[in-house]
Length: 385
Image 1 (tube, rainbow, N blue to C red):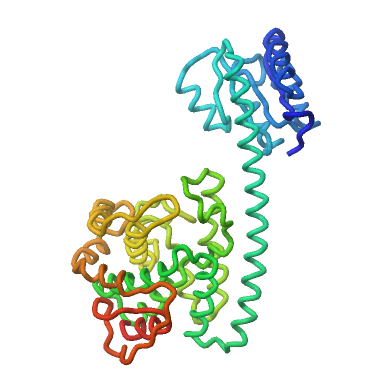
Image 2 (image 1 turned 90 degrees about the horizontal axis):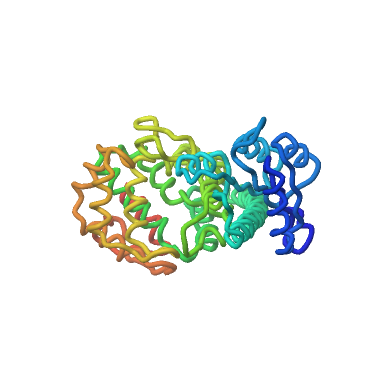
């Protein structure tokens, strides 16, 4: 974003010249480089010619309305922040302005200190979004580079399945070590739910691989977003959501994992159609992804995250039951509820993050009967499925 003057450039759009004059004077005193015009058409012409950090537009004007200025102005200058100003303190008008792209809503007569604060906040939000997009693009390029390196490395392993899975999982563990063990637990949870749902052995193999690698796309998510100890902004959420498509792009290139890649892509879809990336609904979501969704939620709710502490197993089970028919497939939830909760407790206590202990005999292992760690994990999965 181009910033001229100490605090950046502001465009005031109002059909009353006196209002333009007052706002210009107030913002100039605060160090902003301020321009003004008295019609929406003139505002769009100015935006075509030069960039502005913040645009303050009146709602009701002859000719082009303030809403139209925002909608068309955002197309011309997506890097600018738009503020709506009007004499009506109507919540519906405010909501409509925000829906069309305004970042704030100002009511006349203006309180100058509040106006200046809103302009500063709008400018900072856009600058932060720009920095975030730049970082996101850098990490996307880095993810492409890493995936290319990974493919070259995997060619040298002659597509041996266990080593392929290990290489992928190791890359993710190094990238995301604050939640190490999540992939292993979710994989084992998924297998148990799949068994209870009557999934056949061949399909379970693909499901186990997808569960183990579901978050591999987080290689392309910036640390500042992945480990943020607070709620994500809409821009950050959009970047976070790209991990399913990045993961799909990586996994689908490996012949043994082609079927698993479909589950990686769909693992954040919801039964009610409100998920992403494609808003799939009901049976249109791959069965494996519907099973995985329950397992992933179970581990997410019972694990510490940068933004919250772990909840209880009982609360997680209750929430999954409550979301039956909305977030989750009711049939899968019914199968999940038939499983003894002690199974989940023993899986969680058995997966030892970062260890690589030896085991004398894992040939008869089940999820609820044996601790699992390091190199034993693949043997455990094979024994279970």
